[in-house]
Length: 306
Image 1 (tube, rainbow, N blue to C red):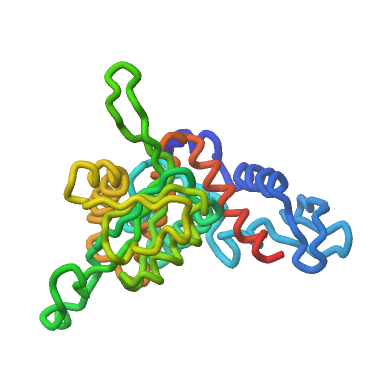
Image 2: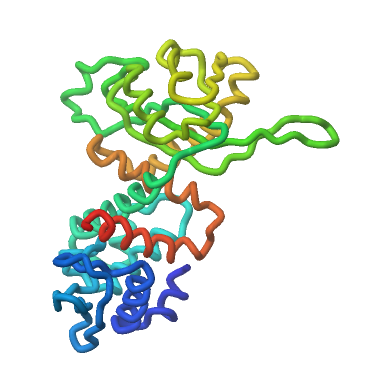
C-alpha cells in the first residue's frame, strides 16, 4: 500500500481505531488479569472490557505499540512506509517522510517494527532442502579501535551471520537442465564459528527431516546428527556453487541492502537483518504485506503474555 492509498483508507485517527479494533478482535483479545477472551468494546473510551472480571484493555495494550505516546495513525503510517518497499527503510528517511522533529523517536519506532518482523519469522522452521553458509557483515567500529583489530576471515570489524535458504531442485523436462527455486530464508547473527553454535541453529530453525547442504568446512562435520541427510561440497566447485546458490545470492543482496545504513552497531544488527529477511520471505505479497505486518504487530505480544 502506497501513501496515497493510505490517506484514502485512513483519513483520520477514528478510521485507524476502527481498523485496528477489527484486527485485534480477529486475532483475539486476552484479558491480562483473568485470561478471558470475551470482551465488550467501550466506544467512548476506545477500550476493551473483559466480560468476566471487568478489566479494561487499551487498543495498544499487548501490541508493539504499548506504552507509546504516538497516535495510532502515525504507527500505521510508519508501517505503510516499511511495507511499501522491498528494500530496507532508514529512520532518517522515515523522519523526513513523516515530519518527526526528534530522530530518536523515529529510530526507536523503526527498531520496534523490525523486532516484530524477527519474532514473526522465528515461528517457523525451514524444511525439505536447506542451504547453509555464513556471511561477514561490516559493523560500526570506533576509529581509535580499528588499528588494533585483526584482519581476514575472523576480523573484529565484521559480524558473522548464519544464512539458511530453503531451496528446491527443478528439472527442465525438455533439456533436463537443473535449476533451483527458493521459498524461505533465515538469517541469524552468531558470536563465533564453533560447531556447537552452528548445531544449535540447525536444531532451532531447520526441520529434522531436511536435507542440509553446506561447504566442506570441518565446522559442519557432525550436522548429520541433526538432519536426515547432510551433503557437503567445496564451495569453489560447480557443484558447490549450485548447492549454495540461494544462500550466496541472499548474502550478496543482504550486504547491498545494508549499505544504505552507513554504520550499524552489532547490538542492532539482528534487527536490520530481520527486516531484510522478513521482506525477502514475503517478496510476492505486494500490498498484502501491510496487513500481514499489522497482524505481526499484535500476535507475538498478546500470545507471549498469556
